[in-house]
Length: 233
Image 1 (cartoon, rainbow, N blue to C red):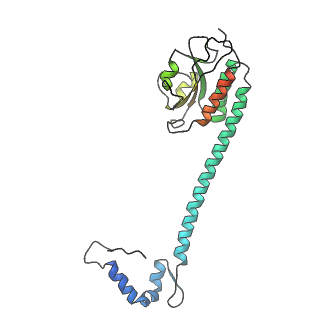
Image 2 (spheres, rainbow, N blue to C red; image 1 turned 60 degrees about the vertical axis):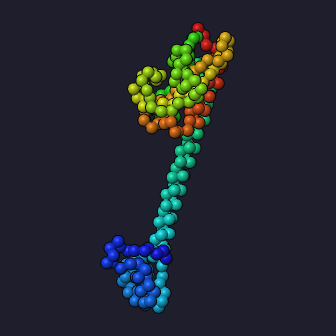
Image 3 (cartoon, rainbow, N blue to C red; image 1 turned 120 degrees about the vertical axis):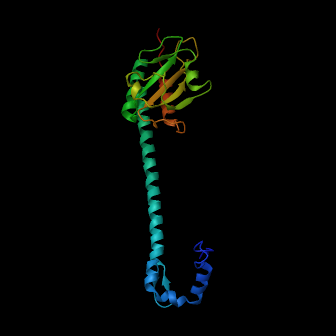
């Protein structure tokens, strides 16, 4: 039993050491007061025996409820992660079936909306050079201006001037931008800077503290699939 030095800051009130000493000297007084024992959650059981079952059971039940709630939260997170991974793998298969660069952009936007509940997705490619129909064009240095010179990803709120999502731009509250560098067959440059962009209708859909493994995986699939075809001028 822990000892508290005082039950009350008022000096006129009894102190716990005095009460404890009195109870030790007169234990039968407490044992005989059944109503008091029941009020504090103790059960008298024969002479000089007090059963702590009710108080202990209450504590055990509370602990069991906390453990059950924690287990349910963990199971819900695991189910959500598994569902997201499954949708990502199916989306990758959809993208790999693209017939040309324009079809790739269309499929990317479709899987973003249909499988992940996003407002849309887009592919942006830096000039100079031709840009496939359905892709967005960026000026030279545009990727570095959005991600930083060595930045690979950026997750956070949408901002003025991005303009990558066409008709759904007004719905986009947060974005994920993933750097790409596809190398197109027959191109003079070994690779061209590009971005795979995802837009969420929710302000907390993409945040700086969020992991971006799944959208980065989709971006890598887009990058490798785009390298199948030359960019025609």
